[in-house]
Amino acid sequence: MIYAKPKITYLTQVPGPYREKMHLKLGIENSYQYSVIYCARLEPNRTWNLELENYEKFFLADRSKTYRHNNPQVWKLLNNLDPDVLIITAFKPTMLYAVFWCILKKRKVVVYNDGTLESEKDFSKIQKLIRKQVFKRTQAFVGPGKGAFDLYRSYGVSDKKMFKSCLCIDNSRFNGKKMKDRKYDLLFSGQIIARKLPLLFVEVAKKIRRQIPSLKVLILGDGDLKNEMLNELDKAKIDYDFKGFLDQNCLPAYYADSKVFLFPTLNDPWGIVANEACASGTPVVTTEVAGVANDLILHGVNGLILPVNTDIWATEVCLLLEDENKLSEFSRNAINLVKEYNHEMAAQGIIESVEFALKN
Image 1 (cartoon, rainbow, N blue to C red):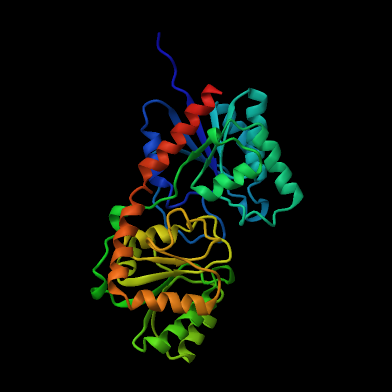
Image 2: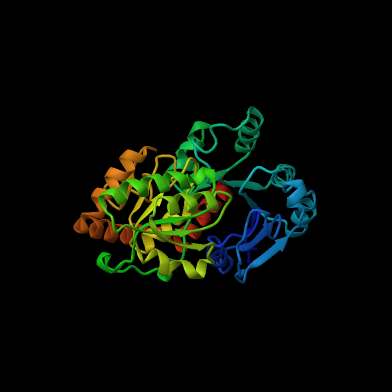
């Protein structure tokens, strides 16, 4: 007797550059019929120039600018696809319609969430209530690391229901240089917005320059604090290069030319920029509220995890820059640790969660 392959549908908001290879791998997995539903092609705050991989995908009408992914059309599409397991990645109305569909059709639900206790601490009672109700009807839970698992536990989710699907990049595209051959001492890469603390970066750079007059800084990214950040660097007479927003294809060379990546943040559920730095052998300095902290980034191993204090950052980073042996050790460790964060492992976590859901 020939049995039909279980159908798996992954419902998410928009395509992202760090999930495409995972979807491709799941799409060619022989044990399942795999498809992806996107709520929209792009959100207003995204500037990705992305080529999508070859897997089965569907796009709902792009209403994200006004409806925040509130699209009942998902119901009809789910009727057509008729999945055995649905994976949702958010709790917007479109996702909730899909959960209701699963309840009525008696299909399995898997939740993927990259949030953390820190990133969701200010959520409203209604937002938390929605999660509680969805979680009661969820067979398996997926997250990128420890932060997501701690969040799930806070809702009473059992560890046996949790599976890791890491956030990752194509590590093979990044190559590191020896520290003595790197042009820049400090790197900032990301959105230049208040949450990313670009002005803290500037203050740290000012203090380090007092100890290292030859300090050279690289700034990658864009955002509403760009002009203020660059003006402050100019006033401090810090030697810097500003490259603006760069496509993912252009990033590797710049990471590989930087000695230390400063990743200050007030809130980051993960921080894929840390993967990019590690793959380039660039040590990462960040805060406890970054999802990568104590997961991909280990204090004293491949980077530093420090409180949000410019004096502490300046002192610790200065000591690191002046210790080439320590820098090289951190660099080697960064490359080795990030190897475990790859698309194969990301896909495997999804598969394990689906298999668990189908059995329960």
